[in-house]
Image (cartoon, rainbow, N blue to C red; front, side, top):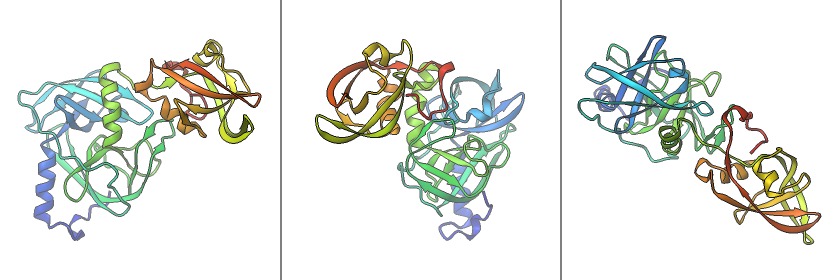
Length: 309
């Protein structure tokens, strides 16, 4: 991130320093045997940071704003979006940061990140949003609600640091692992969705029915429609047990049209695991109804996200 805050019309240096200090009250350092990182208090006693910063740590200390180190515990990791949850106990509860409204980030917006060194000292960097967009999938197959890419990389120790807009409201946390040359901000909506799963299950649950499929146009009861052609069915998977066959075309999921793999994955979000999913299928040009139990994808069986919901 380019350190040019004084040229930004929305700030004088005093105002910017005040914004950094306000946010710093919610920022902790993460001290490990092999390195250091930052994190932000996202809910009472819970820090949001990145997997890339803490995944090798057997033990870590959370460095509070007053410089005091306390024991931290890694509660969960989601490698698909580079998000980690760390819990800790502090003598006094730390304030939660002010949050930006999801989806507000735009290319060109001024932003700043605030981190904390293992000594307790605050560090900050400044730059702009280099690119912004809608929902996207990471190279590991993780779903992110909004693209917020910074205009440069991250300084050492800033992985997991909160990134704030010109008003000091937090957009999300910074990850160095989702883009080859730029830092990426995991937005608040994504953190909210995944963090509870990490605290409860230790990982982000992903629904699984055990098929490979691809978009296709099909005819069902004489009417042309779009759907997903089932090209493979996993042995003993939920879809196989429900009677889904290779060559079937899925046209509706839970009563809603489905014409892309992304639409199907959206219906298999972690909250859906364990529920019954109604499928409308075209088989031989005729409509039929099936019901499939949504299982949790086995961690070892996770694919690269291209085809196997």
